[in-house]
Length: 268
Length: 318
Image (cartoon, rainbow over all chains, first blue to last red):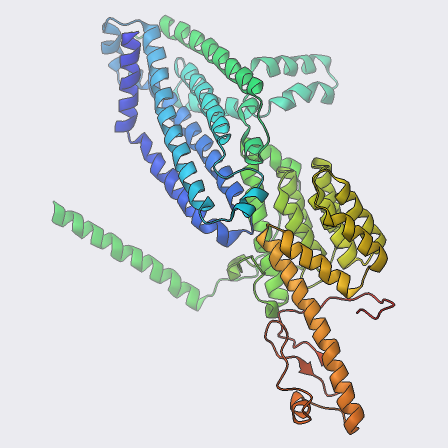
């Protein structure tokens, strides 16, 4: 456990050293700039647009970090041959994989938390000076705590994407891993099509295959509640709990396979 | 080391300034064309929804901003006298739509509301943009109603959309029975304001009457929390005041003509005749025009143009 934690903290430190958190500055500039400009470009619903922008940017920035750091976690050690000195230490291979994964999740969590705080600060600025009656006419309050539900599910989705990236990186090249992870991310957001494909094809076999893929491939649509939250629609606790449980189970599956593949790899 | 860094920084600044100056020089000698075709590369909201995936709400926002810029730009180009759209800043010239007259307005609104079916403002503002008579809008009240009905399919309890449909029927189509029916429908929605039912009764009894129109816009002005709608109501109230002014001034001109036997050709004749204290101006401060035939009208430069087309009524529009 200690070794896993040490590896995780090391990954976090490395990401700070690699200036991964610089993206936060870009995020802050994007949000502040948008909040100042949006009133000049649109007529009304500025707060909705800032919420959409903030949540989408959190998801997009997180996705790039999850994929591009995730694919290098294991392969970089192999490439730099530092894997030999690591494996010579009294640690298990599973600890290395899990520690790397937890380290990146820690980086993502810090990243998303700071982004959420920045989003709330910008929203508070936009709320400032607006009469109460006008605010009441908006779909959702500007400093809506429900935003945290959307942000939380974005983080959960990023954790799943990170697990996918780590999984591919245990047996594939970084470029191929990035491509495959992005492909699964896209497919994960089109899972409804896979479910409905049965009705669109003549071949029952093709229908059955797509139906099976629908159940097996990661369903990422369920983590996207951005539109609901922005419009003030409730997101039931049961829904969030089931989505989180699904992610935990899927991450466990991917980590199990990743550890299994990595344990069998021969680095000679 | 720091000297070298400062030198490099200086060179970078000089190069950047050169780049900016070269671009400005080229644009001075070869002005960039503004005749770029405004087009929608993807006409299907459903297709864009697929492409946007997890970022559909953001895509809806981008289409909404584009719609605003397109509408504001086209309106500004077609009727520059009206100035920038109230509550909507004028877009830069490069963003202003050219070459067509609102033909993309409905497709843009349709895409926006398909991408985000709960985009409240897109339905409400969009309906005004569509219903406003040309050149202030696309002059398509039928499309305005279609857009609002699309919103109602998503949110059947949204009385504001029903109220807006009633306004479109009342104001732009002069169909007072339909307007009254929609006001009634809106008033029947739980939580809707009480005045919608009164509006239904007034519209049914005295539709087209200028006083009932004034009551309607005054109610909107006082009750709406949306700045754009409040500005629009104030604009309509100013237009109604201008119609009243024009009627009153016309009566004065006709009276002077009857008294002197000569048609006054300008306001000074009325001032000399002590019928007026000075040159009368419309609610926006632009002087009214008196034609050579003795007709009073708004100045072509008045932001209140185009004036409301009043339906023929028994009371003569009063």
